Length: 147
Image (cartoon, rainbow, N blue to C red; front, top):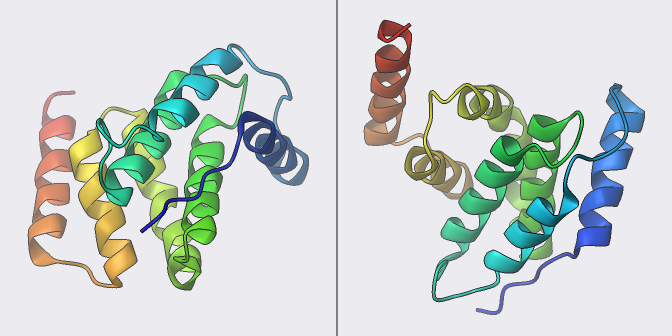
């Protein structure tokens, strides 16, 4: 199945709309980081499955701080945008809701990219698999124990 993508201009416009709607500082630190992520997810050698692409996108936008503000919110919005472009619009509302806490935990280093991928897969499948929820609990407990 062909994957559809958006470009850097669309990503920046999405970020700017988020800042306009919810507050924060406009501007970016390094959009080349964002451009790199958008290019990399199109490489099927590195990201052969749609879940690999969306997990990498959400993780890197969250962690790379390409923008001065709103990186977590932008990671969610760009993930939702990629879902919509590729026919997964049935789960976008659930994705936005579930990703609120998850994006925070990713930013805090409590969730890695592999677990993020599994959590996104559960959203797409419209289920919460026991194994994924257990892995989430274990990851959060471990990160809190390390503090």
